[in-house]
Image 1 (cartoon, rainbow, N blue to C red):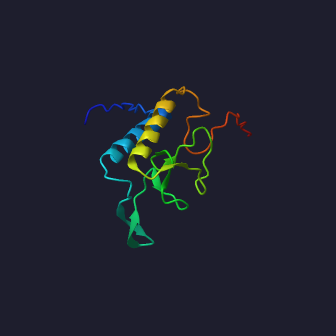
Image 2 (image 1 turned 90 degrees about the vertical axis):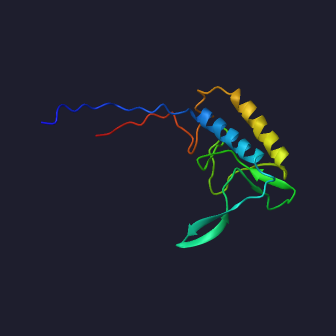
Image 3 (image 1 turned 135 degrees about the vertical axis):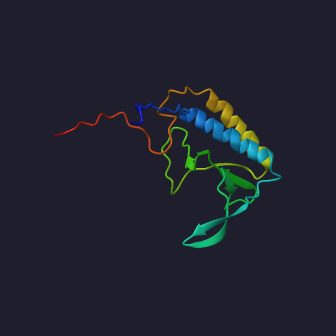
Length: 141
């Protein structure tokens, strides 16, 4: 009555973790270039049903121990990239630099250059979240 229906398989060509990390760094550098300084902007966020003003979530934040420093991580979609190490999301390790826009941009550009030289197929380095394991899982019936 309505004719034949067909199914077409859709596949999305996803970017590698390396490409996603490097794109994220470039995006953050572009955002920094458009800003006057490293002051975090306030955004409205619903916390426990109440709208509150909170700092935006960026790569960087002011250091609690030294006001002339900022601490930062490389993030992809809110996940911290661990440079080949598993990240404890409750107690992550940070990089540190001077609290000025130019110093942070220079460090991010340096990271991007160094990361570009690392083989894309190195699964022990390029991962987000938990460290991948090469153990085979045996199924039992």
